Image (tube, rainbow, N blue to C red; front, side, top):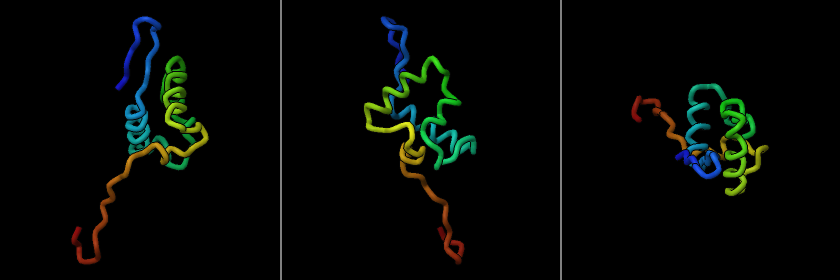
Length: 85
């Protein structure tokens, strides 16, 4: 959830929004799971990046950590040799 604070005209990003943004960019092949988190800044307006950094810092993420560290478990679509899921 993105929350706009009218007092400071500052946007606050929740960790869930950052995670879903990262997951969507990976799904679209615009980012790779092994890239550092700071590569997200290419897709987030500069004026909002500080809020993203603060939220990540509050949850003990470093900008050099990999994007995969942010992502929730992913569902894999594997089938066995017999064609069963």
